Image (cartoon, rainbow, N blue to C red; front, side, top):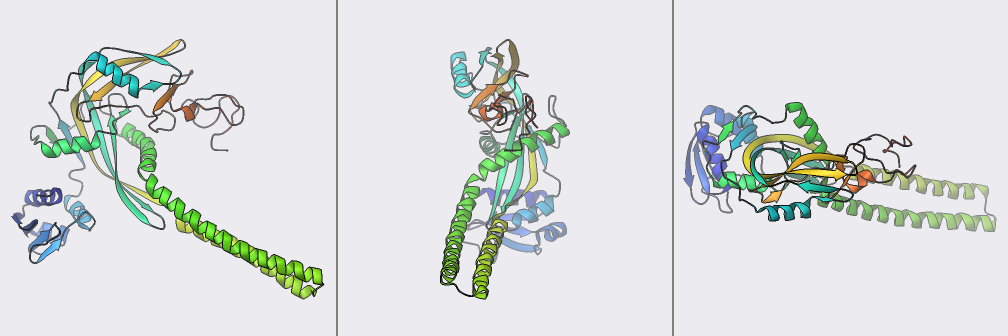
Length: 382
């Protein structure tokens, strides 16, 4: 049974509908009144999911409006769930753990000391968002944020393996709907602030192919527009120069000059039209949240920069089989190499510790998010 067919069958059965699988790849449904109203279905209906449909069946797919119908049926139910996983993590030898950390936690201007790897539990918050980017074309996508609430690290590789793990295994005793938050979980305001900072670079990265395609089309159209109006301007300028050389009438020269100015105005108006055509609007809608309490391999790490030190811990996740990484504390992106500032020992990307364009002094963007601490040059200005 396909994932969508199984999801719809389980949802309808939970709502009191009678559901019977039929071939090829379909369902036969007897729906109670509230299900009929929410899903726009008659009392008896058939739906299909595959290339071939059962007789008298309507097609159901993620691209159709069935996601909106199911959302109407469920309302706010299912927005938040919590799962408690009992699996013990693979006991990575200390030398292997150190090798992973030194490969993935690279400091450009500081060093660190790593403690022994031990078994611990971490609470991960998985947030799902529906993103719609609209320009001359439209792109819809799902964006996942997975945050380790114990240290604020990001587990980019966990969303897919975790959801696959939960689909493959049954956890009736571990899945808790709308349960109270565990100890150490972030409060709502911290979640909103943290997700807002992390979501923009995540969306930009995920939508980059769409953005690049839009920019290529815009550049192509601008080039065509420039070539066309450049030819018009050149012809009009040559006529005006020819009339001036031959001593043409003032009215004719004035008409040529007005034509040249009209071409310039038309060019700028067409450029403005293209910019409006390719302007992008992005709509983000929160879908669901899942808290996953699971065992990890954990080691305390002490970052050393000159005479200062800062301590936190690093977690290796057994489901993702990866080390969680920290976002840049300046721009919230996910750098491959970290720098450490002198003031508060923030770990930031090299761009957030780059020289100020005005005074040329290094300045931490996490410590000074608005302007340079040395010369007060605002970062928003070039």
